[in-house]
Each structure stands twice: as structure tokens, then as C-alpha cells.
Image (cartoon, rainbow, N blue to C red; front, side, top):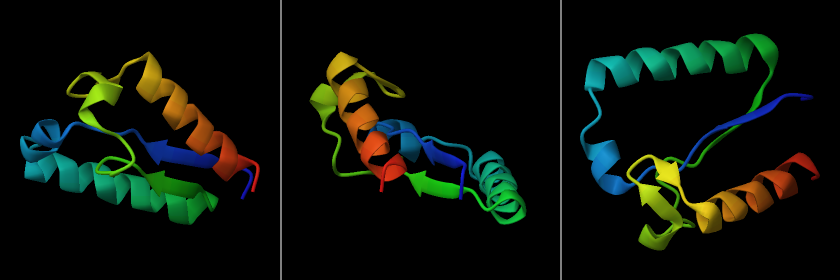
Length: 79
């Protein structure tokens, strides 16, 4: 696929407090897009590669986390 996308890493407490119905609609929509456009999709929401020290808050990476995420995505894109 020429298109690559991902969910960004999230802090565990952010994930725990997501609204289930909204989350289900979002995941269904993403799945439709993946199928329709053959998107190479990666879910990093709960990735163990990211630690507390990689976040500036519950849903934003800090500079260290952003660099880590960028390197991971770069390796995926250049496989």
C-alpha cells in the first residue's frame, strides 16, 4: 500500500476513560477506510514501546516520545 497511517500512543488512563460508543464508531470508520483504500494501518494506542516519560500529557507525546514514534513509523514506511 502507498498509504500508511496509525493511531498515536495514548497514556493508559486516557484509554480507560474513552467513551465506548464513540470509540466503536471511530474504529468502524477506520476499518472501512483501511478496507476501501488498502491502508497500511498500525495501532500504537496501547503500545508497550512508549513509557510514561514519553508523554507530555495523557494524549500527547513529548519530544522524546515524538522522536521515538517518528523512528518507528520511518522504519515501517521504509520496509
